[in-house]
Image (cartoon, rainbow, N blue to C red; front, side, top):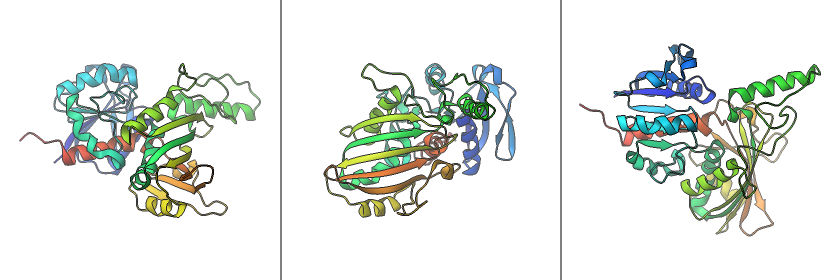
Length: 340
């Protein structure tokens, strides 16, 4: 059985990764359609060994399409996802627009795949924030054993999370520094090359940024509403790959060795934790991979039942495109039926 899939935002970083992963995982498609804004009509994008020409979202007839992978931003999704869902296709949306909607499941397949069953209310399924996705993959197996009470996380997020223009800005600023040209930040609030910026998304009244709020709210929706989460989200001069330093307080005792053994057996996790030079994973080593890598697992002696760990993942893959395709795989395996 095969399925017609449309990718909205096909020319963006995540849209291109969606097309790559559909081909890599041999998703059973009858047809793949690349959609974008009018200004991108005719642009070519790769799908495996094939080249697709982008069509205009505004003029496309979604009747007969089974799944729509939406990666065009919250404004576009707010307008188009309900329209598309009303025509029959299931929309898997990568923006923040629908994540906290009570009628829309927010899903990380390794964590709460069962929530996909609730998709039919709006025919929309939400992808979480990229930093949330990799964190809950690491936390879920530990939560099942020892029950998480509180999480303190600091993120080190690559510029690709802010789009292609952000990647270009890092490249151009880096080059400018080497040739002593002047630097004028555009995408970011301050210089990003050879610098870090403790600010992602807009500031809220309580002093946290919306990115930090997302990590707390989404973790509770996906994993457990009783978990307390506080985050500090930082943009770093890395092209691809988000990193997180996570401190976890549990209700029940759990040792670093136990956590290491649990995570080695957990879906989506890869433990690389040698207490020696280089015995851990960094962002450049995770690029292009599907796994969430976990290193530096150790006891936190400052709290009862505390652990600290380091978590790294390709944000364009597990943080966005891969997670969406994993949702689609479960959707067709367990829930969608083709008309005879």
